[in-house]
Length: 101
Image (cartoon, rainbow, N blue to C red; front, side, top):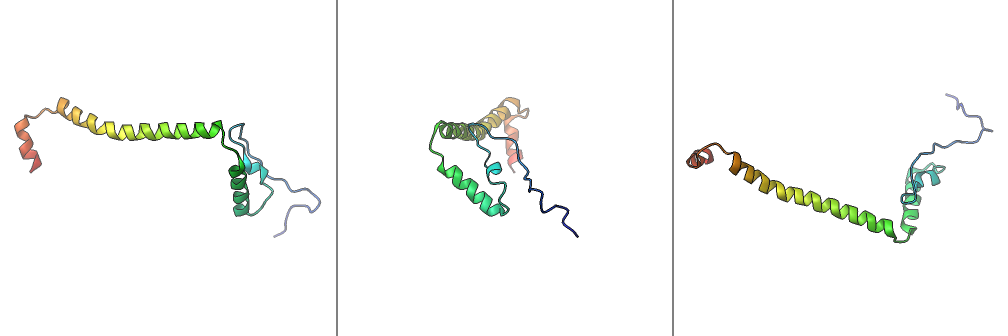
């Protein structure tokens, strides 16, 4: 099978869209490197060089709010299901003994 690329034509790389002031698209910076592990290491080293800033605080706050709401949801659903059972249970309280056995 022959290679259809001409040796004189420059190699083109697929560029991706995305990135902004908060999140730089490092994929385009290292797109010319063929080895995916080397590309990943270089991109992560660039990310590690970025100084601590407002966007780091924003990411931590958003993640913290998400973790809080998720854990609150897990805590609250136990109370809600118990209260729904109390409000909507149609059987007589004496019938509970037959259900437990």
